[in-house]
Length: 489
Image (cartoon, rainbow, N blue to C red; front, side):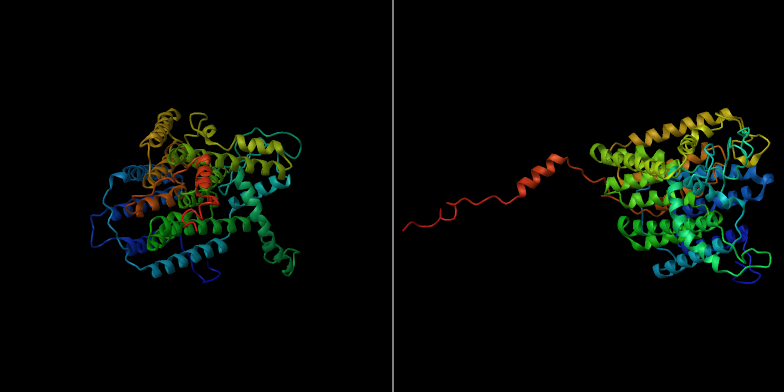
């Protein structure tokens, strides 16, 4: 940002203080201090101090993870208890819709400028691995991790010898699914147009370009911009068409941009894009096939939407659930087929798929380093303690799926948020810091009005459509009917 304003610098704590003041000024209900809205704002703002403690370093990381677990537990209770709140009065924001739209657009441009002007660190090179996989240059034994980080296991060295298969780098550990590779490669084609402009730059004295731009850095920035824009548009459309109030859409989108966790992880598109697809699936809930396609694509990008599939299938019922499941299966098959056809290294694809789902990374399957508190909450603790946590999470997913039997969208939204929030408790590496996984869903829970008639659409069988079509067809008129009422001469 100092290229635009000389001497300008905004660190993480300062952004937290500024966003805190803006959020309180716009959303806090000063006239109704003891209200659910104020409680929700307090719970949302409790996340940022834990993230700051974790980002500070190893000295405060352990306390930061404990803080995050406590705040995440409160948010989980809030999402599960959302159905008990029967009175939902309309609470206006302290700013009108035009002002919130301006604030949202200004914050989006500010964070975009920050993303474009900040110097990329070494973790931004992660996009090169999917691009190399698509071109056949990646090693067949590489496991792709695309949370601005790459995990390389067992890759052969240049001299033909193999490594010991140990982790080379784990800054962040959100596994990238096969759809991320396809989307990244598609956006990389657009990035090539931007990078090609560097060929027109003048040469420096040492033979290098004056301002070289790497393809993977441009791709990372472009995907991050598009992912956040998808979340903003999705929240606005849900507020307009599902909640029936465009002001709520602007309020949710603006709060999403003002949250400190959005600014902290603004470049982590692999966290944002699956959450955006879940929001769009909620917007298209009246069409099971479209919702299934969106959730299937989200599952192929990151693992956590997989746990939402049983809940959504139960929401649609037998016929709608069959369409929903068919869309998920067809989307997954199309992604895998495309990845197989476009890649020159089928063995690398198999390794990526086998390392995609996180149970292999659970702490009770492998030991963490107790001396490294930056690994997460489960690092310094006994690995066996996470087994009942994961089992309890699975019981919660099953319970939310089967009860109540006939669900409405007002129950699917908070239950989906609770399922995604629950993944933070058992995810071994840095569990609790992945706030962008559930933040858009949590905003839908906070701003949701009283919804009565938002149930799954009634899906009629195919034979019913044929019978209805046959019954509505015009019947041929008999020859004698036209003269039946006439008087014979």
